[in-house]
Image (cartoon, rainbow, N blue to C red; front, side, top):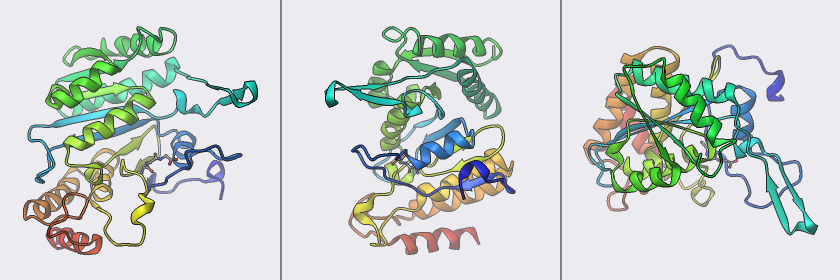
Length: 285
Ligand code: GGG
């Protein structure tokens, strides 16, 4: 059924992962990017919080709020000069920036966070990222209790590597959010542990940050943690069931704490996707 004619009854989607080809395919457009846009799930919440695995960094606790519907991801690309020049349109609008900035500030206010960092490249892109910066700063005025700072995206990348504890909530356009959140995920222990929730005015999409990892398809070794924690995000942010969300998070934490892990964390003593999931379920009951 085409997404445009689908009408939701539960207000939520649990999305797995896709991998789109890195070469042009006629009439192809990333299905997950399309889904986010068509459902107007315009803000992608990507938290990174310390989990008890040796690959994670203690003290990290940040949320990247990524704009989900525009920027270079509008998919408006052309090639000219017989294939020698590629051109992509970058779109930033007041309406999309306002709503994603409101989500970021509301999240900060609701969850007791202190600071929102606006990440952009307004010095080089004044008409697009400059607009994003201006509008996000306008929104910040309505939240006097939340500190606001801003960073150029290259500086933000530097700090994400050097000291991720510098960040609390980050709000940023689509492409920068995509890249910075994968960087942050490394501090959370790895992409296999990184959840996300795309939210808008109606339907939410819970999805792991990672892609579909076709190289390990069918081997039973994928890490289910990111998907399970994405469901916890759905419980907390969409269905207002923080106690149930906490139960799921506690179960995952307990399983990792007792040393159970899949092979992406480290190979020695790794268990399968099914075994890991069974252990989480056992802690839930
Ligand atoms: N679960 C999120 C996901 O699939 N991430 C990878 C991604 O966004 N890929 C874009 C694509 O392959 O079209």
